[in-house]
Image (cartoon, rainbow, N blue to C red; front, side, top):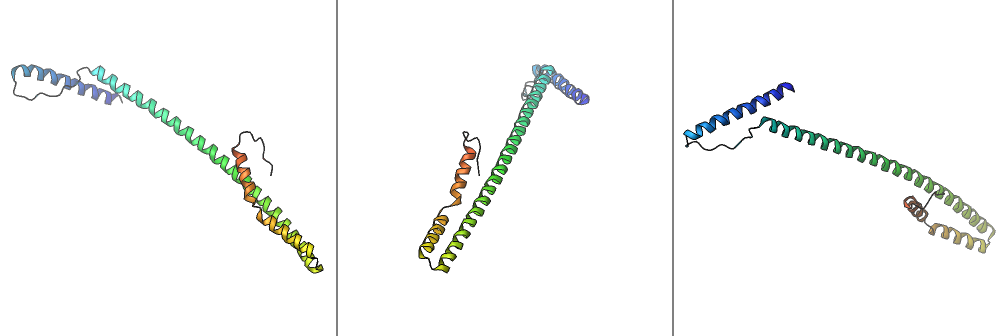
Length: 158
């Protein structure tokens, strides 16, 4: 780092010396094209470089902090989704097991009605089976999901 700095300072010194030589020869020779002006003050140029480096470091650190915050937010959201998924899965398993038990019970009642020839029992059993199958368990899942996002809901019972 020190050798790079010294090389930079020597380079500016050569430019400074060249500009002074060009200025004195400019007074005597007007045929040369004019060169663009290079800053003569080495300290000012060095300070500009240091200032740019500091600004770059600050911005890089700010962006690093933003990336860390984004990753943390991502992790929190992924964890919330995983937990919601587990709850929804548990709810659907429970509902389908419950529905299966009820429907099996209704079919047993239907079989009993068929065996005894009881038309009223057959009619009620078929009506109950149709009624249960018309009800979608996904309606309850929709309400469960709405409860996830409602800040007023303190707990969700399944």
